[in-house]
Amino acid sequence: MEVKLWHDKREREMYDNFADLFAIVKTTEKLEKAYVRDVVGAAEYEAECAKLIAQFRTLATALRDTVPSVERFLDTYRADCPAAANRLLVAGVPATVEHRSSFASDPSSAVAVAECVQHFITAMDSLKLNMVAVDQVHPLLSDLLSSLNKVPQIGPDFEGKTKTKEWISRLAKMGAADELTEGEARQLLFDLDSSYNSFIAALPKAPPSSSASSSGGGS
Image 1 (cartoon, rainbow, N blue to C red):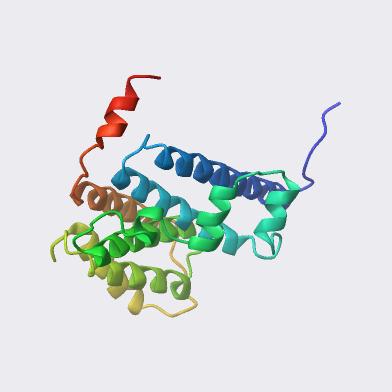
Image 2: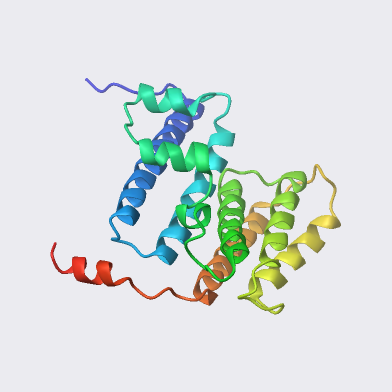
């Protein structure tokens, strides 16, 4: 006999979101361990960790009514992930930013890069969660543009900046309660994804550590 975990579309979406939240926590735990063991480099770790933190914050905000306590959620579903809990609930930034271990010559640059990644992912995830009202989208794009302007590795003509400015200008002509059409939301999501990929590609790549190189052939 087939047993359904949900009774309607809304309840199914809630359980899907629970699964996404659980997956983010478990993935963060694995990433933290991989970084500590030097399996991933600092630059790769920082970008992926910042992305997970942004996804976690977006989803946690969307679930605040059904998951008022993430700690209780982790305990209920037996997610024994202390490293992830510390990174997502306590530190709130990647370890490289927390300890200033990357971009050592300019620590503020590391913070700016991490903020950009988080703003990109937050904006994209919000659109995927159908948060398309002007008063929801405009602040996200404003925060993204502000963080992009703090990153010295990208110039004024960077496509992410120009596209974000164009969308902000477009939204400024609309009312706060107006909503993006399905086509507009889809185009904005495409522009953000394209800009995010260009942003990551524009960052300097950190050389692999000697210990990571030597340990890579043993497994």
